[in-house]
Structures are given as C-alpha cells and as structure tokens.
Image 1: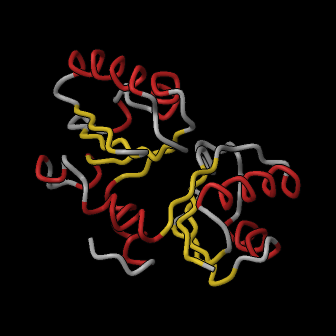
Image 2: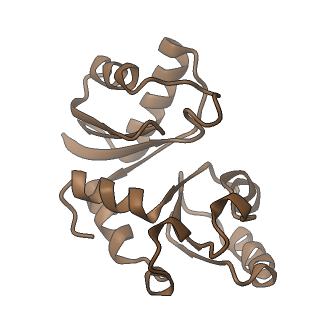
Image 3: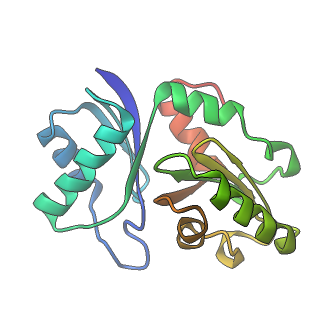
Length: 182
C-alpha cells in the first residue's frame, strides 16, 4: 500500500461534470482505498492504495464512469513522484504568484517527436513558457491561465497524452497533504 495523489480533469468546472467530494471520497473507499482526503472541489484526492499510480488512475476512472456515470481523465502520482516534481520545477524562480505557475500532469511520457513539435510551437508563445520534465509539463503563464494556449486539450493534442493541470498553489497544498516539502 502506498499513498497516491489522484487528479481528475474537468470536474466541477463551469457546472459541468458535477462531482461532490463526498461522493468521490465514498467511491475511493468503495475501491478499497484508505486515508482518503480531498482538496478543493476540483477533483484532487489523496489516498492510500495498492498498485502503481497508473493502476490507481485507471481504477478511479473506471469507478467514476461505472458508479457515477462520469467519464473524465484521471492521472495519479506516487508520493515519491510528487516530491520529485515539486523539487524539479524549472520555472519556479520566474514568478512569485503561484497562480501564474502551473503543472500539467500527463498520463505517461510523451515521445520525442511530440516534444520536438511542442518546443517548436512554444517559442512563438512568449512570454509564456513551458518545460516538460518526464511526465510533467511546467507552465509559466504571466497573463494568467484563462488566456493561455497551454490548456490540457492543447497539450493532449501536441503531446499525445492525457493531461490535467493544477496551479502551483494547489501543487504545494497537495505536497503538504502527502508530507512533501515544497
């Protein structure tokens, strides 16, 4: 059994994909997961579960669809992975406002051709910046996330992976929940 951070994309956004956090906690309990804690109303959970992060994400996605009729992408990270991604942020010194720094979590490693294509496009989107490190894409959006081209849908198309994004404040709050120094 290991602790995992579980992230759902597009939950409780603009009145779509309604998922009360009590229902999410109940579903995770039904899956046999323990120590379940949710953060905010946007599909963030921490739980103890057997299996790899990929297996946990797949089980949660299946459970959401089967039990609640909610078909949304789910990505998960282990505590070790969460610690690594917090420590590895190459853009953290660019911005004091954690709402202008983000991490897009991918469901796996993008291939080199996809990365090269994104790098070629990203240069033309300055002053926004993106750095992909493993399965995580770090974003600096000085104009705010609402106006960025680096949305999860955009990155999914460019990188060929399922994606969900959280601002740096949420990343650090989840790090605190799992005992990772931020």
